[in-house]
Length: 251
Image (tube, rainbow, N blue to C red; front, side, top):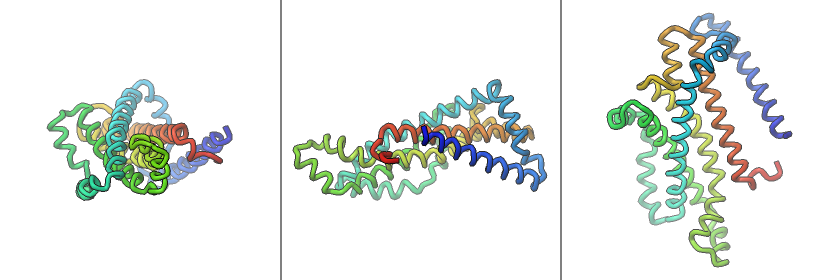
């Protein structure tokens, strides 16, 4: 409870600071394009249930599905590659060649192949999350000390038991860190993909408000997207605390 109290207090202080900076920036700029926090929050409260909630639900579904798919595909593959030097000798260079490519350039291809619904957006975010987690899982598996593996093997552990009791627990904290980092990237790509094609989602809501010169509504959508990112980040942090309890011992 004490930890949650500190976290809530930290969020309250950070929110107050952001609102103060926002209000100051609005006063300095003096443009309708940057309204103060009061009208934006008012529009957020007014439109949340009646208009914004369906778009928030669509965006949340897209980003959560993408992160689950990306993690489910990349984590096992990265751990396997990291613990197999011969496979890594081939997969490593392939990864180095493909990882730096900005995946957003494939959005037009995905739109042609998959249409303008959820599929291309989920596929694009999944692709980006996949590579981020794959690199992290591979490096985490490679970094496990040989002595830790040998000590378990000397007790008669099978290859599967080594993965279950050594490799996976050692790599999980790094994988969760990669997932939290991927949250910001996934939200950014979600916004981009929803502004290019489709008629729903928070990205579309923000751009639609911008085209109508409804700037306070636009910032209300930005608030909703920010809250979505915070919620995902905190959900991952809570999941890590439950799954990787040994990393929180003594805190």
